[in-house]
Length: 136
Length: 288
Image (cartoon, rainbow over all chains, first blue to last red; front, side, top):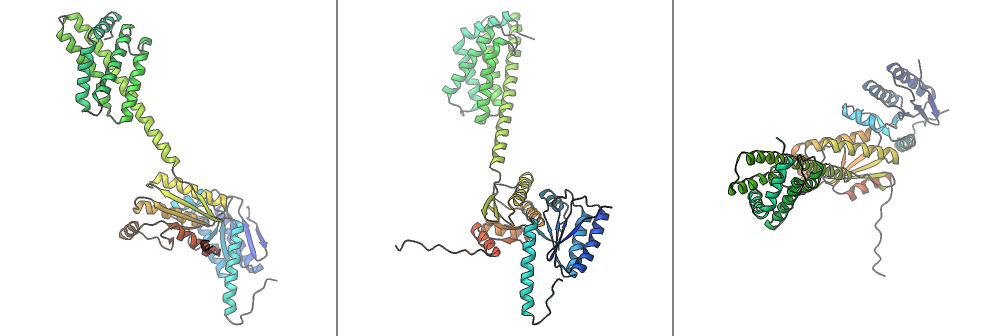
């Protein structure tokens, strides 16, 4: 079975989906990502779907699940590069994918994560001396 | 029953001989129907031209309207019907302008003495010829109308919807005119594509030019906003006039957490504040 590679760039895990998202592939990606987030201690996940022509309801739900899982593991997920046709189809189907953060492209996604992280850190500075989490 | 060239020739002579009386009774017939929407002089001129056309065609031995000798007549009829179509006359009014020739000729025949069987047969032939001319007029009329509609549809799409870049990372869609499903689809596709092409994370939809917002229009706008969000762009709706705001509330339309602003300027200021760009008023230079 084909697998979607997960790349680590700094504090971010980058997933670029270049193959058809069959249900098994999606589930495998969900498992892989959960493990990698724990193993690497990353705080951001970017899923690039710019190569996807079709996003069905199952893939949509899997993306939402991935977002929820990573939030539990203190990592923010951003889905980037959704094509206009895909977005229109999802809206027509009534799937607005609540709970998923989106950005137009990888670059804007990374900016978004950096901004979120900065805001988080400010909050944390206010909260007395919680030990800072650093990636090894 | 087709018109023989012999009979055609007779009628050509008849048309020439009684030119004035035929034109005047023909004009009167048409004028009664059009009820003064064309001036009498104008109508008389058109009728006289048509009469000449018929006369030439018949003298040339035209048995059918498709004959070569009737080419000029066909051109005249086509010209007449396209003008009438553009002036807003109905198809009946246009066709009757041709059919009235039969009445006019009948009047001349009645006045004369030659109402024998031959004349009758010839008249039926002429009648068929005029009928065909009338149908041809009707066809040209319909064609002219269709062209008119096609032209207008094209113009409408042209003024459809430009997506303009307003600022670095901000695009705007000034919507003008009624939003139906087809147009909403075009607008949505164009906006989303522009977002991808320019990489703009903010879009402003300005509805100043939308005459009325009902639930359906609101639905279209909401869909566009949700689709843009799915792609990672934020949409702001601006240009909501007081009346529209009242309608929206009266209809119970919920825009949820979508930002709405009264004017495009407000929307732009809102976006710039979000992106952290500073907006300062330029000091006026009048004091110098």
